[in-house]
Image (cartoon, rainbow, N blue to C red; front, side, top):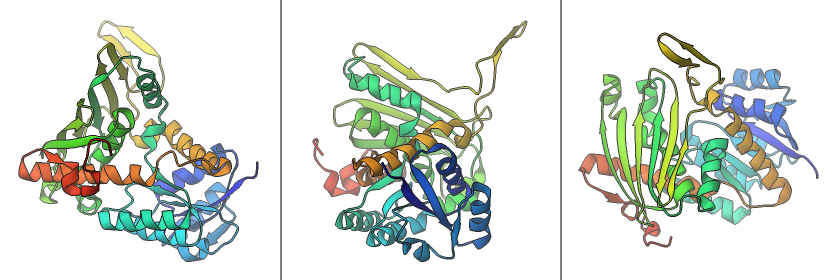
Length: 344
């Protein structure tokens, strides 16, 4: 089976992570070139990871007939346009989340992908975490019968700069969006959300118009309920846990630790601290999502994280924002009428 030739657009932190994984951990992939608005960043990325070619612009990369697929790892406001350009060039696309902060732009990107007949995978890496995937397998097998209650804990070790908050869409579209995706991945579609929030971590985040601590409740189409708790700062590390209660029992996925060594002394038991942040915590997941993308291209199978999977968490984010502002439950269909109905 032939290798897939890829190009990378965006050589910042997440782009460099993908470059490292593609060149070192993904069989069947060849990363031919990289482009970034900051030419030095693209050159450094190429040098560090043995990428043979640097393109001055995304358009130059997309015009290379040998490149079959691209990874879009640029700023959020450029995602939808680049997806459209890549689709028009006949390139398959891996795009970091979110596809866009504007639902109309997401619609344009999805239409372009469909018209071109190319594959689109959205970068929701947590779906590929081995512990969370195991939860999904057990739920699908009916291990605990009908799920009743989902609880997702998601805390970051430190808040982002206020300047980032102003352009990120806020906590629900930047941080909770991963938890919205995970809720759908595990229990299916959501009808309604109710959000409360506060500024408890950093007053500058409040000044930027956002909250840094939030609780979101979910009502699934099945009748099950969900709770997501978010904080921009947990002093002990990146805390990522999931719990599911069902009619015949419960399931848990705890935080993996860097090692399993335990010290016992007069003060009690001590283990290693949590992974500091998402790059360390989800290292395996980042590799697995790119392997899944390349495998889908090589085997001609469907995207493991579709454009619709990329769109609905954004809708949920806007529903949460409206719920917080108006202090009431908000149905997803209020944000996007196409999501009305229990069987969508």
